[in-house]
Image 1 (cartoon, rainbow, N blue to C red):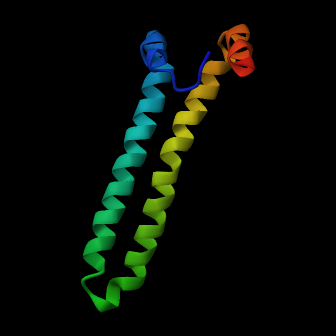
Image 2: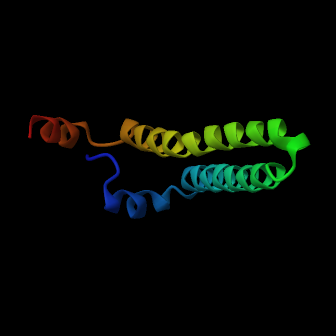
Image 3: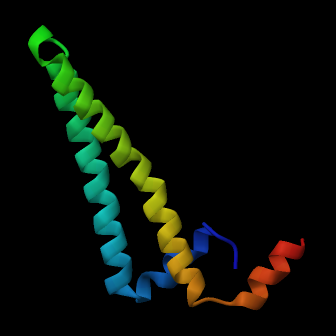
Length: 93
């Protein structure tokens, strides 16, 4: 079982609750990062708000780093319930 295999998304859509939770978290993190970057950009127009703007960029960057973390967490979650023989075969290749 290969990580990030394109068919995996369709395979686990039957597990709607888990899939929905991960997709909702991924979208929420993505939206929060975008909003923080927009707010930080506007703050940089004003000298008095550059420090808070920098914090918005930092927190937004952390949110962007959470996106691949959520994806790999979902993959390992599904891998936990998956076919270990197939995974072992792929590791030997």
